[in-house]
Amino acid sequence: MSATTGDTLAPLRREWIRHTPAERLVRWAMFLAVVASVVWAVRTIDIIPEFLADAPEQMADLLVRMWPPDLAYYPRTVHAALIETLHIATLGTVFGFVMAIPLALLAARNICRVPALNALAQVGLVASRSVNSLVWALIFVAVFGPGAAAGVFAIAFRSIGFVGKLLAEALEEMNPGPREALRAAGAPWGAEMLKAVWPQIRPAFWGVALFRWDINVRESAVLGLVGAGGIGVVLEDAINFFQWDQVATILLAILAVVLIAEIVVTRVRARLL
Image 1 (tube, rainbow, N blue to C red):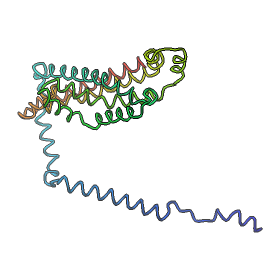
Image 2: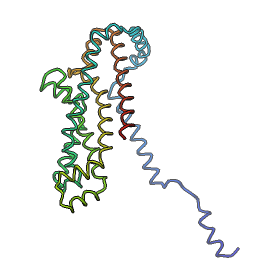
Image 3: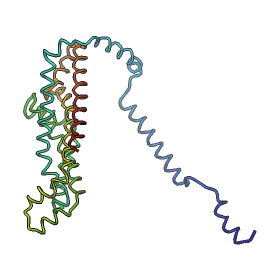
């Protein structure tokens, strides 16, 4: 074998190593950090082993108390509370869109060319998403008092960040050609939005609207636990008075509404999009 052939095959005889020593060290450090975090979390939340071992027996006892559900309780109290929950979700979604659309326009860099306004709008969207709907509900219960109004505003303010972020991304991804053509023809800004922007983001708009309403129906079901109206108020009362057969009826009603909302949203999306 010639020297040239030997030099060609030399790289093939090298020992293959998947990770360098530095990479292995980093991987082990990350693994140890994750383990230490889990151990720290377990020690912090103070899990009582006796209660953990007894949990299956307690859960079985709770299910026995829930069966059979008190179906006669539904027309007396649950139905009206479910309708109120749907109203909270719907009105909250509408108000959320009304407030989110201006922020989305300001956050989209191809619509608003002022970096300071872009940053300010992004801060508003992040602030809305960072606060849980139950926290918003607590805030508005303190402002408006217990009731459905607090739930509507909690859902609306929680929806702003989600809706505004997705609409801003849809605006930034649209084709600039139609807007430039209308601008070159001397069309006003409103005409650009109506004739060039809206047709492009309309599918995203309706998709986000339906998806957010579906989410809000689920979130509205628990707002009553903090006094913000809806089925959660009835659920809390039943739990506080240990009426587990009524709790089962309420949970079945919530499950049915969520499933129906999912079916409706899926079919409407298929027709619109």
